[in-house]
Length: 319
Image (cartoon, rainbow, N blue to C red; front, side, top):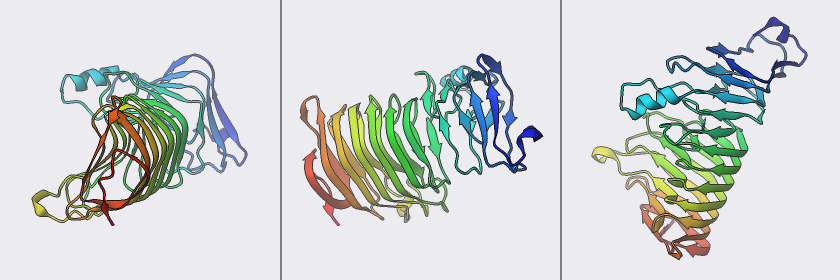
């Protein structure tokens, strides 16, 4: 980063209208005394089409479009070849008080942004991935991908998600957790005022069936609209391998005011661990239908309570 930006006063980098092909760029503010550096983009930044190269890391961004040109990588993966993982279009490291607005991320090899769009043949393209973070807010965003619209990884706490339009994609997921035996948990997550359209899942918690210290607790899914969603409410924990103890515990998760249409008969599926059952699950005011018919719920090792309207009917065991 230019030394002219590294004084105490606020500074702005302006990218004018037009298209600009860039290579690996890392904007490092560690040596800067200024606490207010802004990247203002009116144009489009094009990443290299060579999917082995890296993209960009920024302190903060305002406006513009990032075109990750991920078509070559998608073709590689769709052909089942030995492909690299792909780089993230936009990354924030070790940052505080970031504001990102009016940004479009498209055709990314991997995705992380505000208005996030990926074509139908783009595999493994999470919209926004959050992990090892606290106090993050994601609001008023449109996300359409071939994977999770938003995925929430280990070490996430005090996350606020509101006003999201998700679809197509795999919904909003906590997890997957349990990939490592020693792993931080997820807690204090709020997801509200979200519309899922034609997604594989709605609100999902997913863990690997293996021993892990990870957990999910104190999370709220509220004011959710489902439009033809295959699995509107899903906890997918599976059973533990070789009868080992799986300590990742799911507890105190609330589903409140969730309505709309399911693309399958089973609209609520809570498949929890036999060793550590889900506890403190609250289902309040659910109204989900399937082709104008009554939906069903399936619960395995899930304990909690219900209140208000219950469509489908309750399947929880009492705490």
